Length: 257
Image (cartoon, rainbow, N blue to C red; front, side):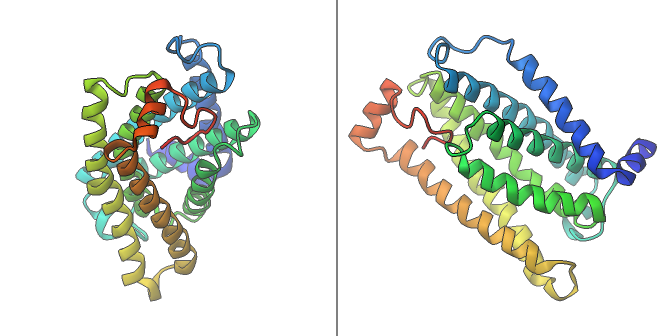
């Protein structure tokens, strides 16, 4: 393992490309799984289903990996700047490969305008993660930030269930509660902790202004999305609820409320 990670550290760029290609292969394999009937026949919806399915795989993998890293090496949370292990560096490399693949998939399929929120998020993450891989600084910070993928699991499940027309199911009702709970307890808590760490240690950190700017933008995005989640799942208007049941609301938008 150490030899593998040492090779990755010597060539971070090609390593990221390698993992992006592996995610592309997985994307192709997921494409062989037949999507729900309500999705079949619509090119955009079919692509969206595959894209979200791969995102769910990434979230499950990296969320579990990040939690395990923090539990096994608690120093990860106390030193976001310089501490890291070979497995934590590998995690950041794998996740960066996913974000490169997902960005090229969105842009390459001509869905950039429909999914600009995802592209903005990916640009911020990639700029931070690539800096981390090349300098080997903030690896622990990136691993801590990847704890938000625990919430991404329920976020992606939510969108997949909506696409399948299962908003009235018990699975959707349970997931929407778990989604909001993990959004606050994991995603917001993680975001704010990393922001606090940068602010509290600002004078001694490398590129602190850059990271603080990225974090503040992502914090705003997260708060706006939380508002949209609560409004859509717990305070829907009559017209919105009708559109949800008939599957017509935001049919051509990547990120639905």
